[in-house]
Length: 475
Length: 114
Image 1 (spheres, rainbow over the protein chains, first blue to last red):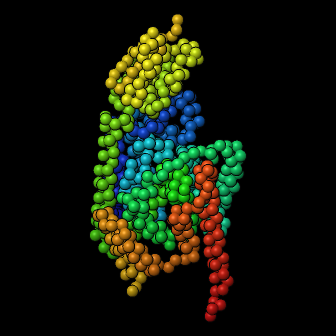
Image 2 (image 1 turned 90 degrees about the vertical axis):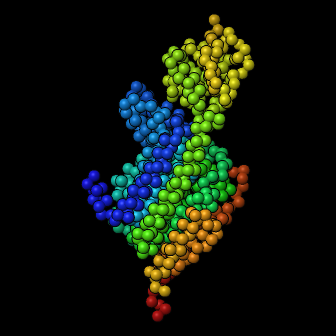
Image 3 (image 1 turned 135 degrees about the horizontal axis):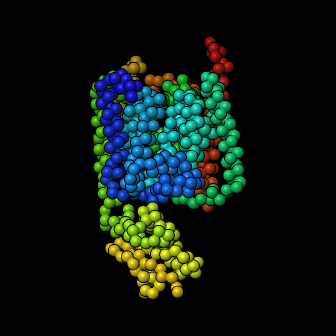
């Protein structure tokens, strides 16, 4: 605390205002999401809550689920909320996503500060604040695992820049276990860095020599693992995807274009300065930029593989570069007060613009005339299942909408997806549990053979948006 | 013109291009102003060979998307992605090697011009 106060005292009053504005920009666009929505949006939210929600009541089962998931560290962090009293997972989830956005912004700020000083760090936080919805899809897609993996990869580069080996090891491990894509990109970056270190005569300090040796071993281990995976899991390489990036046009022609320009300047300045003093960090961050750029723009290479998913890593590079570029301009214009005020004007103006754009999107997701997020009638039906049906009941639905995924989360009943033909299968008939079949009628209606067979399927609940039939066992 | 003055002019030009773009000035005009400022800045700075080598990381991906390699579309996307990466990494390594050899050549011939 004293260190923080001391740090603030050492800053000029213009820098203090800039810091306050930057933090405001970062926090405002992040908390706009939980403040503007009444329920989590995005298909993955239900799955994330379902994984962690029973940590207190069924700890071994939950820990087993977490450890066998793709995002164990992200889930472990999220599961700590179980210990908060009287928690409503659906209320807290958007706040957790907002916290992930803020944490990533702070870590980007810490890295930018390490790369180019206080002003760059402050500006980086504000620029990262411009990214929700317009440049990333974490909130809309509820990709919590990936969002909470970003601080670790960013802090890894910060620790690398500080030449702290324990810090690097911890951050790399957390990044690898937070999200597989982040882990793969970090690993690929280290391998590419190592190849580049082999190609040149760099004068390194003792610590850097140790880091270089570790990178070499990681590269060898990574190459062996990649060959093993290729030999045993070749089907992964056959994954199909064809999507164009919705963010790259925004970057090259849209509202993020000025930041791209500043980023060119920023990276140029960073290269010139760090090539002399911190070549290892410069080569590592260069490798990260190289891989992130080709990945995020892979549809321009005629591929189109998960372009929107991998955009965030390029965005981190652009934000870092833009912050350094902006900081350089503010410092070299030789009119500190005017340039800082102009910077505040630019950052505030851009944030207000993002706020207004995002407000329209949040209003749209809340609209009752659209079928974007789960509707109140569907939530009422799930609440009915929770309060009325026996504890060991099974609820069947089709897989036509991901809103059905909220049934096990909110009703605490077993939930199975089936095709409507399967429901007549004897294997379900043999189950002793009480069985229900649910339809969210905005998406699908109960078929005639269920509706007309009142002996077998009894309509037990109905409202404007849902129908629940109890399946009566054959005597 | 002395270097600090040139850097200052470059900074103001770049700043003007960014603010201009945010205020809705056309993309080509703002890019033109930015390009002028950027050229003035680079001209006022001294780039070492290592800086040029590191700059390859940033320049090559931009060239890559301007020159997409026509790979057969029936090959699965991840394999095509791997191939594109391998090609551009190979280009990067080749250029780095050339830079390294050039650096070595310069080091070996220091003072010979005199």
